[in-house]
Image (cartoon, rainbow, N blue to C red; front, side, top):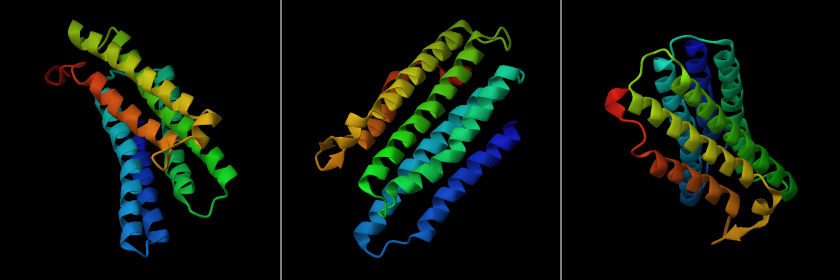
Length: 195
């Protein structure tokens, strides 16, 4: 399952990069905007992959539930570059752009929620033997992931597609704030040296 997962994450990152080549910018502003947009998608995928590989390194076996969660994660990871490229496409009609933005928010919510569930599974397993504070840290981390997942799901509400803050739609601002919030919450959750 890990080999397949690595392949899917690698392909998702490649698809995102290929989208840049498919629609090359023609101005300096367009170049910077394209790089920033790709950077956001890259950040989502690479952070998810790093969390996933850390969890799978500690997971002693592949239970049927873990396999199902992995499949759900891989499906949402596979969708991310497609949805993101649709989202940043300038040829979308505004009503369809709102729908794509909502589906992208749900996809991010699923990704983070599944990681939370995998983290919880690891924290509550009897094996491998983990130190008590590591287990407690993993439990808190899973709860933080579920909170952030909830923020993504909440951001899919239609009202957040219509609100503009400082010239930007509010939904992407919420997504970015959720990432920052997770790392603020997680900062002292799991002693890294003990994983």
